[in-house]
Image 1: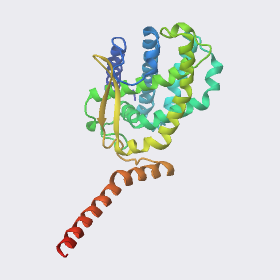
Image 2: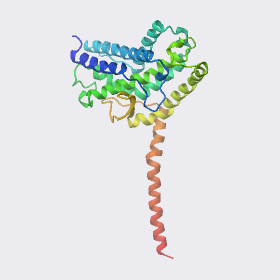
Image 3: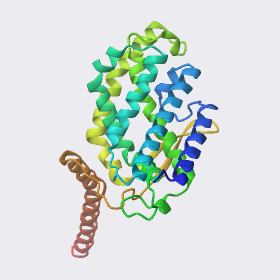
Image 4: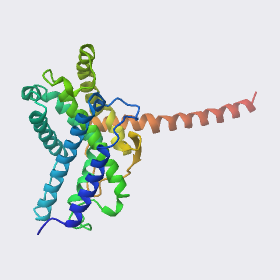
Length: 290
């Protein structure tokens, strides 16, 4: 059995459309700080193209093995690690970054990948499964009829590439031996300031993945970074149910945080409202009797 031609064509069309956008307008109008803005335009395009091409290659490989009915199972964290390693090898070859630095920062990069998986893992699974399923009626995969449009898949892919570039640039910008020509007019004081961003990026990822993200896992509300006519934009997308036959697995800590948010956002206000109604009722009753 060969790879489903329909899946491959669909995959190539989506990746090609995003690739065309990458080569046009990359102005940041999201209102948020993106590390990709620190790079010269050719380097910026090179980074995004590399991420796209490696993701496409892995998706095609998954499609092939799935077409052989080998019951392919993959993990999002392993997929992300493979993309990171492949892109890193390109950078080491073409931009000559230091290989030692990558290993020195392994523990911090791990937290960035963890945070990325928690924020975008469901979206990445949705994207991959839309490509690798051979039988669209197969029960074990996402029902492709539930996907809104091809445009949604393109938006998801754009979002993943833009956000994943932050992890790549974390390695580049904080590398003491990176070539200075990759940055866009950054002086020595500004470079020192960029290196101080390491702690902010690291701790923000840790706090978000441990404490804040569970609420958004529960609500399935995603702020997608996309490439529009004006450049990088933000689009809010609500996907109420991404998994069909598999429940979300949260850690005990994350479940506790979700429960806390539910108490604060729903239970406590309702209890307060009930007490206010009861209090007003008794005040009216008592005011009748002097």
